[in-house]
Amino acid sequence: MTSLKWWQTAVFYQIYPRSFADGNGDGIGDFKGMTEKLDYLASLGVDALWLSPHFPSPNWDCGYDISDYQSVAPEYGTLEEFKLFLAEAHRRNLRVILDLVLNHTSDEHPWFLESRSSRDNPKADWYVWADTPPNNWQSCFDGEAWTYVPERDQYYYHFFMKQQPDLNWHNPQVKEAMWDAVRFWLDLGVDGYRLDAIGTIFEDPDLTPHNVPMTLAELRRSTELAKTPEEKERIGEYWKEMFQNQLDRPGVHDVMKELRSIIDGYDNDRMLIGEDENIDYLGSGADELHLVFNFPLMRTKVITPAHIRSNQQERLPKLEALSAQQGWPCNTLGNHDCSRIYTCFGNKLHDAELARLHAALVLTLKGTPFLYNGEEIGMTDYMLTDISQVKDTMGSWYYHAIVTDMGVHPEEAMVRTAEMTRDKNRTPMQWSNKPNAGFSPDEVRTWLPVNPNYKEGINVYEQDQNPDSLLNYYRHLLRIRKGSSALKEGEYIPLHETAENYFAFLRVSDEQKVLVVLNFSEERLELDFSKTENVSEKKLQTLFSSAVRSHTEPVIEKLTITPFEVFIAELV
Ligand code: GLC
Image (cartoon, rainbow, N blue to C red):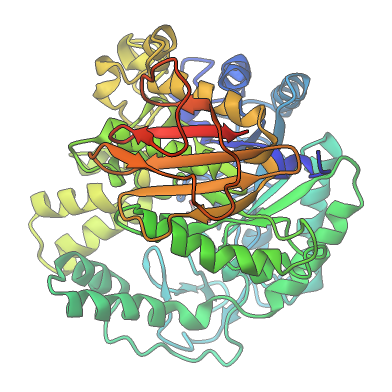
């Protein structure tokens, strides 16, 4: 075995605290609930948990607007309950990383309250202020990026909602205050951080305006209405152009380096993963982040073998160019910001089969997999039907913008809002077939409605009993992965690279060589790997298959793969 770090071989599982488990029966997830579910997570076979923000927040952006970086949101519990959760997770060998929001705070954070109070208070320069809106920049959530404050007779900048003012990272005091918060949780024993929206930390110092002839709401609306490929392409360009001066400034690297040196001062290999796909944020491989997400893998309408191959071909050489083992991939297909895998990568005909293929893809590609809570039981998007249910305020902002300013009919506006809001993929975890999916007691109104499809077998309790369920499929696959040095550490070698229907590849470690075939089609395949480059072995020993296979060992010259099969075998 090579000496990879824990975060290279671990499977991460993202918990969205508000929706994961309601331990005190108030309709909102909490630490009591999360602690009670640790045995479930251990039984699933994941190794590490990423918690979306658990800090006090007015919840304009569902916890990503933090009003105190060093305590626990009262609805989630107390600091003591957090410590218990962490200790109990560690006792089960589950690592825990937290969400760290660097770019902005809540507008109710005491730092901002002080900063906004006058032009000459000690924190006057902790945020980004201007006498007049210096340009036409937009916030990516709610229109104008500059918001007026009468006390200062000035405007502050916010890349996200107006309730999320951007910190001024040029100010060393801001850094120190944030690093105190970082140390606070590291001192308590957390294993690292997922860094929120790092690309937004700095803006173009020349404040260059964008030249898109639209506001944010208009651009969103045009995106919905675009029909021809040309229109779609133009709109795609507009999205890039609109924010290009507000993102990815070089200064971010210095911030990452400072943070890395803090992390490296701790024992137990604490780690950092950036919410960004840019491999440059790994720095030299040893001085910035440990991981960035392979978001381009999920940025497609359909996951095809060709898409996967070109994605790997594009990323792996760049990662491998960093010094040994320090450019490590990290794959995911879903999180709290996007449509659920089951919904967006399904095709309405073979959703169940495709969900299994997609899970296998993330769990067999080279790199650290990140799963999102609920994926393992096949949770789907849930479309809200009434604006009063919407909790994701970028959704309610958009609804009002198109109804009021553009005269869109409320019914249509609601359909559009339900599609664009992230509430659809944040509904409560479906634990059982009892009312409220067992998330909260029967009579309680949960913070977001529960998806009624919990009654159709999409719940943990029923899937736990059924050996053929998606949940048990995940458990099985996670077990196979854990026992396979090739799947955890091995190099990736694509095979049969022109195949359109299936994706075949090897994972090769010092001890083991594994063949993975993912059949993305309804066709039954007969494949011959005996003459394939890099395959000198003559025999296959099945490690895992999503199909019912006969007991005889598969034959390398004539390997039959059933429709949508996930087939994993050791070459011997
Ligand atoms: C990240 C989070 C998202 C949040 C935004 C602003 O993209 O994942 O949920 O709204 O940052 O903090």
